[in-house]
View 1: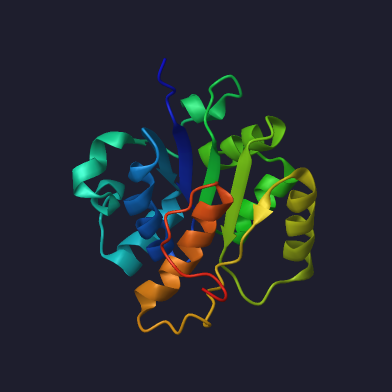
View 2: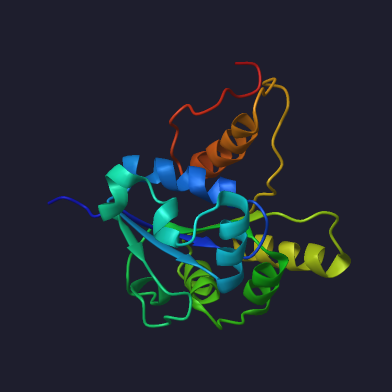
Length: 193
């Protein structure tokens, strides 16, 4: 019996839409179903940073059938329930507002509810935070989430691989996300490789 592989990706309102777009290009190679949602503020950033008017325009053309676009207000969507099985949630980029609500257990939209589900069901929750500098409240929220089992992955690319283009920096962060999900596609070279 074939097993359906599913994952959820959420885009919140922080700069760094390129990280999400690149991840969305790669996930169809691994997953049969990718649930995708974006906050209203994320859509404004996607328009500004990527020039895309809709979330559908960010998706890889050949693999669109693998994506299920979900409204960020749909608390009845499958990933909002612990009884619906999926591998985890990647919030990329993760705004400090979304991070704070997740840390406080405020499930007021699909992003925060799905994060809550991943924590309670012990599924992977990767938060690709994109903010600098950080204040004490943000640091404490990150500590709370790390203690609860989330992975805090700051969008901090490395320079030891001598990146030549912005896409090289984006690939480094996305590759780290994939590795944390147990996916090794060799997108970038690690230290000493």
